[in-house]
Image 1 (cartoon, rainbow, N blue to C red):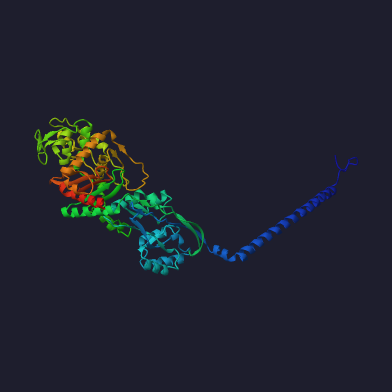
Image 2: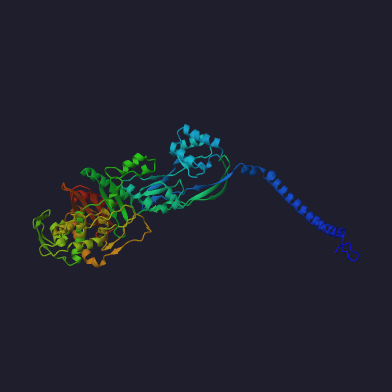
Length: 608
C-alpha cells in the first residue's frame, strides 16, 4: 500500500517527532546545569583548602619544611650500657671500665652528595686513617649503620684533637668506648677472663648487641656475659642531607650490667700467689696450683694457676701477632691448670680409697698388717718408702704407707682387697672422672681407668698391678687440683660433695651429693688425716694457730723419675672452713715442697 493512497490514515510526521525530542533534551540540559553548578562549588572549596594548606607549608612552616625538603633523615643511634663490674667477696673491684675513645666512621651518616663524600674519603686516605680493607668495606654499603673504627684507644687529648679536626666532616665521630681494666693479681686472669669485639653472628642472634659492643671471651666474663652486658638504649636524632645533627627526637636510656660478686678473698688470693710463685722459682718448676675452698658450701676463696697472663693485653689494643704468641706460648700461659691440668694424684687419693675399704668392710678401724718396705707379686716389685711395721688405716694415712693401700685396693696378706670396680665406684662418688661443675668454661674431667678403658685404648688386659697402682694414685689415674680439693672438702664436712662456685648467689642449680651413709668411714679417715699432723708426714702444721688435718702426696710421672708435689689439708679440724690443695708440677716430694706453701698460706689466713 502506498502512503499516497487517499484512504490511508497518516501518522505523526517527522518534524513533529523532532520537536518532541528537543523538548526532552532541553529538560535534561536544565538538570545538567544544576549538577554542574554544585560541581563548581565543590571545586572552589577544594581550591580554597589547598591554597590554605599551601600557605601553611610555604609561609608558616617554611624553614622547617625546607630542611625536610633538603633530605633530613632520622637516625637511630644505639647507646651502649655500662658493663657490670666484678668484685671480690668484700666488694673490692677486680674489674672496672676506663674511659677510652675511638675515631669512628659511620657510612650511613656520610653526605648524600658524591662529591662531599669523596672529599672525606680522600682526606682520610691522605692522612693514613683509612686502610684499603676499611675503604672496601665502606664502599660496599654506604647505607650501613655499622661504624668503622679508624683509630681506637685514644687518650683524652688526642680524642679532642681529632674532634676539632673532623668537626666539619659528617659521618666521622669521636665515641667513648669504655675499656675493660683488670686488677693485676697472679691467677685472676684465668678466673676473670677478658672481653673482645662482638661478632656478626652474635649481633644477629641477640638483641643485647650492636656493632660497637664488646662481649666476654673467656673466664667469668664469658660465663656470665648476659648478666654483665646490660641492655642497649637508643637515641633518635635528625640529621640534614649533609649528615649534620639537627635535633633529638627520642631517647631510651641503656640499662647497666649487673655487678658480679665473687666468693674470692682478694688478700688471700694475693698471699696464695705470692707463696706459690716463690716455691715455683725455688724448685725451678714449670707450673703450680693453689686452691682454697670453703668445705661448708663449695665457695672458692682463692684459685691460683701459674704461669698466667695479663688479661689487660686483650682490652688495650692487642695485635694479631701478640694473640698468636699467647695462644702458642710454650708454657701454656692461657691454661688454668686448676681446672684443666690433669695429673697423677699420688697419695692424696688415699683418703678416698680408705673410705671405700672401710665402707665395704674390706678393712675396719682396727685392721692391721705388718707393712714391709715392698711386696712382690710374681716378677713385679711394688715398693714403699720404708718399712712401716704394724699399721692400721689411720697410721697408713698418717705416714702414707703404700703397702697398706696396695692391700686395700688389690688385696694382700689378710686383706682381700676392693678390686678395680669398687675403687672406680667410690672414686666416682667423690667426683673423680667427672667435671665438678664449677662456673668456668674449660674444665676437664680427668680419668678413672677401667679394664674396659685399658682394653680399648691400650689393647691390654687389666692386672692386679694396675689395681695396686690405682690404689696409691699412680698408673693411668688422672685428676685435676679442683677435684682433689672438692673431694677433700667432702671428707672435711663429714660427707657432702658440693658444686664449687666462684660467684656468690650463683643461679645455677647446685649439685650436692650426700655421702651420709659413709659417715662412720669418713670420720675414721678424718682422724687418720688429723694423725698425719700430730705425728705423721704433715707435722709442720702443728705450729698453726688452729687445728688441722692433712695428706701429703708425691706422684711419679714421665720416664725420668720426676715427681709432682701434692698436699691437701683442711682446718679447723673440729669445724672446717678452709680446705686447700697445693700442686707443684715436677717440684719433688709433697711434704718437702707443697706442704710449706700450704703452711704459709694457712698461718697467714688464721693469724689475720
